[in-house]
Length: 160
Image 1 (cartoon, rainbow, N blue to C red):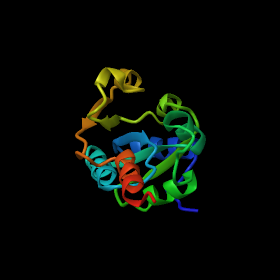
Image 2 (cartoon, rainbow, N blue to C red):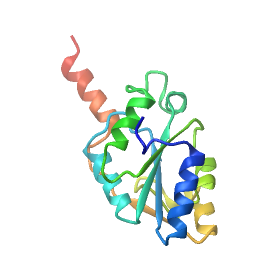
Image 3 (cartoon, one colour):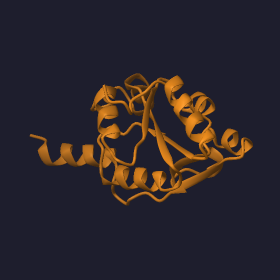
Image 4 (spheres, rainbow, N blue to C red):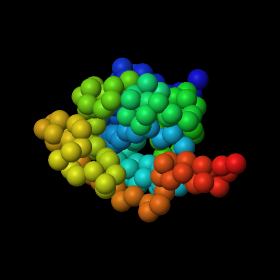
């Protein structure tokens, strides 16, 4: 197993050690089903905001609840493996809840990041992070780069 793919408890220990060494942890989360250029740019930009990046990855069950029963396309172990292969990603934690609040409370990142399509007031965990001296950042999305758009293109181009 990849050393970057860890449990929430392991991630919390690593982030606490990094924090003790004066490093700032960045956290983001998502489904990351079909990794594309938008994801890669977003994750690289998130990592650039701090000293290490922890990614909360929605489990297969939570993706199905959020996106519908036809998703995810790739199972969580493969999605985690692909994320962990990125140089900008330091830790990957799979979580089963529909939102990452409990994971954010466990990890206590200094910086919480979401896409700019989220209003700061709607970012789950934002109040918690700010209450503990951290900050919330949003990152611009790459126009037209989305998993849903990729799936739609495949369906349109390759439908018999």
